[in-house]
Image (cartoon, rainbow, N blue to C red; front, side, top):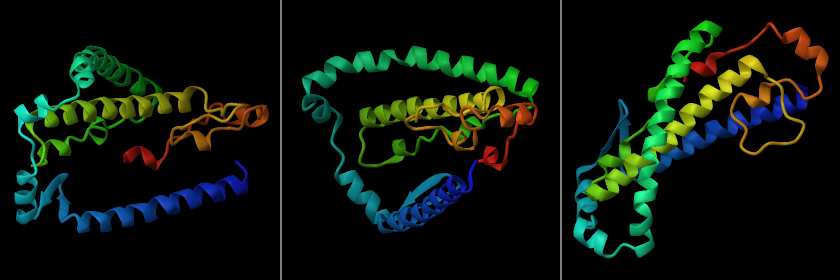
Length: 195
């Protein structure tokens, strides 16, 4: 990787750190803290949240017809999502130890904190849990795929790709045959796997 690209990556990482600081400030403004992955609101905030909750009957009666009609289709994805979760987890459990790749920690990708919000009714909480599972699963699968790609073919594409995974920037440049053959046996995995 050339020096300018490396410097840009460093700048991006610094900006990500700055973003974390600003997000922490915003959390403080919303009167909550996180301790051991548990969100804790001030008592007055919880009381206000409960007062703003829409009852289940009112929520369903005021729902858009298109939302009610398409909900079964959304939830029908549960089966393929569960199968994807199972097969990718089995793949990782068998193949990653064989390749010497550190396993992806599943719990880092599944966060269900929205189900504890006092202003959500039971159906909203179920919907939030479903979306958390689906998006967490996709992120989990993406990390497994990224580590697999890093092991087998850490080469960038000739064309720019949208939303590249976190490991992609360190892949070998497209067409750099010399470096590819020099590094073919030096598969690298670093500290970001510990996240």
